[in-house]
Amino acid sequence: MSRKPRIRFTTSNAVRPSGRRTLRLAIVGFGTVGSGTAKVLLEHQQEVERRLGCRLQLKTICDIQARDVSWLGRTVEITRDWKQVVNDPEVDIVVELIGGLTTARAVAFATLAARKHLVTANKQLVAEHGVELAERSRAAGVQLGIEACVAGGTPLLHAIREGLAGEHFTAVYGILNGTTNYILTEMERRGCSFRQALAEAQEKGYAERDPTFDVQGYDTRYKIAILAMLCFGQTVRVESIPVEGITRIDQVDFAYAHRLSHTIRLIAAARRRPQNRLEISVRPMMIPQASALANVLGSINGVLLVGNKGGNTTMTGRGAGGEPTGVAVLSDVVEIARSMLAGGTSTTPLGYTRWHPAKIALPGESIVAAYMRLVVRDRPGILARVCGILARHRINIDSVLQQPAMPKGHLPFVMTLEATREKHVLRAVAEIARLPFLSEPPLVMPFAELP
Ligand code: NDP
Ligand code: HSE
Image 1 (spheres, rainbow, N blue to C red):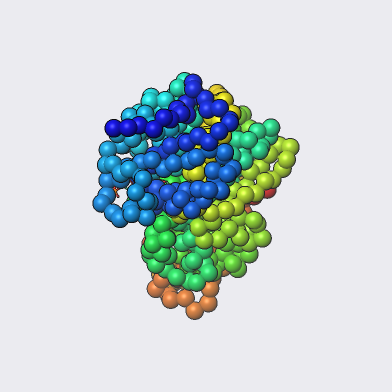
Image 2 (cartoon, rainbow, N blue to C red):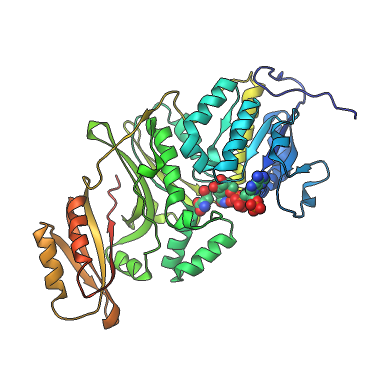
């Protein structure tokens, strides 16, 4: 078999900046993001190559499904075996787009062991093994691209790592999941049901393979763990981050939120607290309608970075979907190629060269004002019982709201509670949950304290 002469794009054998070279990549996992990335590459190839000054060839697709990939052209090789890709000496960059942990981790470690550059969109892999991946890539003298892991097609991680590298972050707040934001904003905008909005988000390619990862907040939890590494240089055990999803949010909550000039979003928040503690959570929150995050709609993601010197920096952009995420993946490929062309310097993909384990703030210690929605079988004396419990826990009521003409057998009403330590609210709510006239558990959401 005749073989073309080729240039190895490794850091130990850097490419000379002169002349037209060919950089070869392989995509492992050809679902929503894998195929989206290939489409973006094929459509933008000439432009990207003009930016790079070298050729970019999609050499191999590793796909375990039988599907029509004729649109890729005849030069792209197809395999079902990821090991073939990782062991192919012609492949310079492996792009892992399988998702999940087990096989993805094997692909990632094998890629770095083979001294190939790795790009991944896998937030679970990076949240759980980011430091190890960064250290292995540094030791191997290759690069790791992770831009697509958080906020999809929005260049958030580059902004944190490069553009704001001189900043000392005090907090980060984000809407980091396109699926849940699509669901919440469609419920709010069109009054459609949770189920219908989720089906649409799946249809549009925003949702994870198992959409409970999205709606229960787990996907967002991986992303805020990654942001804690990049913004604060702190590693956080993912399971230690309190998480609450959006499945209990009802249209009536939007009606009440609007009466309070607020709306509801799934907010990931991480704040530095006294004694070097990190307060970190993922949960639906009431946010002022006038805030920038309230105007983050559909699958768009929005992030508010709070810096010691620069104050607030807000970024919004596409958070999900094959092609927007493909842009982020391809941008990592371009960055790696550029750095190889310039002599193969290694980057610090997680923004720091050393991390320390986060000391998570004790749960319940934060001071919050809260929204509490109760659904009751109506009868006299309900308010008196609920107010009695709140008074015993020394919680001051700010307002009581009840929409007119609600069904008596399933009556949702709302109390807003003045700011107090969250543990007091939780204890009071646990007692309220046992009252006999409640037809479902109370729903409690904090009012976000956005700067
Ligand atoms: P998909 O499920 O659409 O695609 C994953 C593909 O990988 C599937 O076709 C799957 O095949 C295939 N696969 C599984 N195991 C192997 C294997 N051993 N070898 C080759 N292929 C394999 O997921 P997405 O494209 O949505 O997500 C991919 C990654 O990107 C995930 O980490 C996700 O979190 C992340 N991401 C997704 C975004 C999005 O908007 N969808 C945005 C940002 C990041 P099969 O179906 O047969 O199992
Ligand atoms: N399922 C994720 C979302 C994809 O909806 O945001 C992007 O990570």
